[in-house]
Structures are given as structure tokens and as C-alpha cells.
Length: 138
Image (cartoon, rainbow, N blue to C red; front, side, top):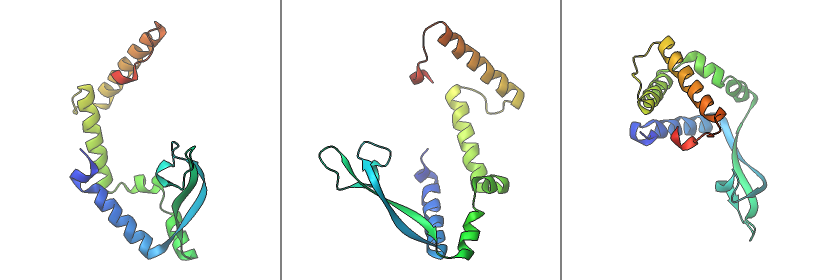
């Protein structure tokens, strides 16, 4: 399932747009970057070697009041508040992981930990036997 199929991406974009319009300005931070590096989608004017200028939009509070407000917007606070949309996203993620491993979503915490330990020990044994770790099998 993609974010678009459940509407979450457009909701997040809307919330960010409203937040930025109310309390922030966007400034471009410029630094050298490569078209093959992690900033590749922001690289402009690349030369023959693929080196160009990264122009990354950074959100900055427009005054001290909004700076104080934004300082409280942390992942810790978000998870402590645990809004319904976040709980739903985690539920869907849990369901997808359980389905990928072929496990019942009704597993208790103890059963889940036992399955994870079994999986970990199995993979550690495979690596110790010199067979390596096949990431594609995960």
C-alpha cells in the first residue's frame, strides 16, 4: 500500500504547507554535491563529472514565537501524544511485516519475541557456517 492510496501523503503535504505558511520561511541552502549522491534530486548545474550545486530548501521559523513553537515539534513529543493517524500507520506497518513473515497478527509479545529470537539465531547460524547473509531472502 502506498501513502497515496490511503491519502496520508497528501494529508502530510497539506499539514506541512499550512505549517510553513503560518510560521516559517523557506531558504535555500547551497553546497557542492554529486548527481549520484544522497542529495542528487537537489543538484543543479552539474558538470561532466556530475558535480554541481545542491540547492536544498530549508524551513526556518520567521520569528522567536514560532521558533519556540517549532522547537516543541519533536519525534519524542509526537510519539508521546500518539495521534490516531500515527497509531494507524504503525498498525498497518505491523500488519505488513507480520504478513511478510507469514506470522499471525494475533501473536502475543512473548510469542513475537520467541519468533524473532528463533529467526535471529537461525540467521546467525547460517552466517557462522560461512554461508553469508543473503539480504534478498529477507
